[in-house]
Image (cartoon, rainbow over all chains, first blue to last red; front, side):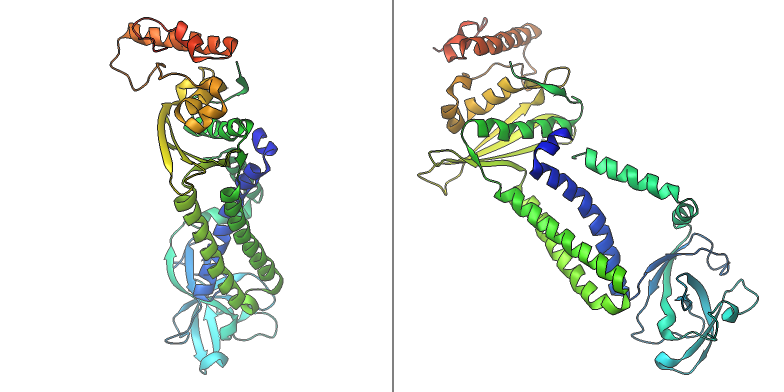
Length: 172
Length: 236
């Protein structure tokens, strides 16, 4: 470590190792986003409103392209409510019209009422552009780690710190 | 005798290799070789430009959101994978573990690549020299030496035997540093497992006394020869 400070090239190479791990992870995420045409192609279920289909902590893979057919009733979609940045996973239960202008109504399988209550003030339905993507695959429970991390934010700092230290101190 | 103050863990192959790798440029530069950094500079340039693209993508994504920038992002992802692929290719096919490239005053070029296998404490060094007369004809020399030859029990790096290994086996280095050239060697051999215990001890002793005598007398080949122990014909 100390010798690395005396040799700028070696220091640069070691920093590069660390930086490339982070940037490769980020670019893979972005690549997946572009491919799936969805700003966030992998999401974690945070609530139990879709039980028994999805539990808290399930990891969902989203697909945002409507190449062969458009979003239809029965599909499970993730949408963002206007002005809020919390993605919600619910099922499309009504659809009026066709194309990008179609009006969609969603409801959680485990909820008694549909989502009109959840939508923003003055918003009575969803449009295609509100939808982040349709669920195409899922892995149960794996995402629980991120729930832990968001409920205990100090864990994030600890994890990042450990990862950084390990990479900087080792040259393997 | 030059012994490093820094200690490393003798059980970590990575530590052994890195310390040895770092000693090579030190030694060769001290002999008047001019180090060329083209290989590592290219690697750094590839790596950091990939990172620059990633940083830019992060910034515009953060600033303007996904939807309005997704075509730029697609291009950036493509560029990033190309650069990263080039970097991987460079490390794997061009650098091939090269730790030193240098030229001496006569114009002879030397390139040193090192390699270790997992859990095998043997240093594989390939020294390729290109003479000035024939700059396209490589003259490779491969060495396989146990790290025990230049690390002591505590994990100190001992430079003399390490430098002797290079000076004795590579003529270009030998000419630049004639005091470190040692006749075909004895050395407590890890490979020579079929020797008797006595012989091993003898060669070990010879090695250690030879090394210290080398230091005192300025290390002429005759000086080392005079303390060589039984069973080895003196050539000089």
